[in-house]
Length: 279
Ligand SMILES: Nc1ncnc2c1ncn2[C@@H]1O[C@H](COP(=O)(O)OP(=O)(O)OP(=O)(O)O)[C@@H](O)[C@H]1O
Image 1 (cartoon, protein in one colour):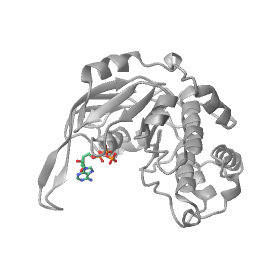
Image 2 (cartoon, rainbow, N blue to C red; image 1 turned 180 degrees about the vertical axis):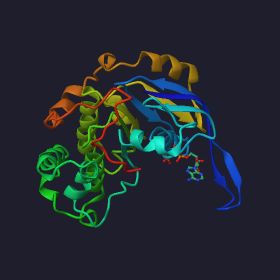
Image 3 (cartoon, rainbow, N blue to C red; image 1 turned 120 degrees about the vertical axis):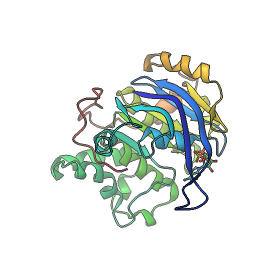
């Protein structure tokens, strides 16, 4: 599903058009996440979490090593091969990236509209997801009229509405209070139970304690425990998720799951024609 092998990543350094490169932001990162796994991505600020996520949702290619996502090896793939795989990935960006001139409803509907879903059938899905994230009363609001937490929930709804096979989220609870954060995590876990592979970068230790799952820990661009990550990665399954004593409370907070229109696709060769390319 997701495999990193001896991955190194450098960003351009010294300003644009200088042709020089900065130091390695990621160094020899190796792990494998099987389909249907839920994984925390942890580490201090600047450790490389967003960089790992950018490689996972194919916004970047590694400068060395191999990244394989949903059957595609990104370092070797031609540009045209990236788009269909990106359409099967849901992304919650740290800075939301909502379109400010579209309502919350239209932001969430965007992936389905770009994929050609008829208006009549997408309306129910979008309304259900907005309800799921507690924003059914704000469907007509524009992003600038929403609080940071509300914008974050719109971004999460947009990332999950097309049932991606892989869902990556960068600090998805950063602007939420504790209760909302637990509720949103319950939503991501529900997506995971329905089959999506989920990777969540966070600083929120309380949240990690409430939802225990295998973790990749980065320090200075390196995996803290590369051997552990390799071993855990081979062992990850949804069934082995060990509920925290507080998990029942979190489940109580979980809204009703949306109607099961279609489960996330597992077959890497099929592609998902209903999903947009937001990247
Ligand atoms: N676009 C960029 N250009 C140059 N360097 C970058 C760029 N993005 C990240 N870096 C550098 O790569 C390293 C890792 O950054 P990254 O954003 O991946 O860390 P992070 O763990 O996500 O941090 P945070 O928790 O603060 O978001 C840092 O040294 C950062 O300065």
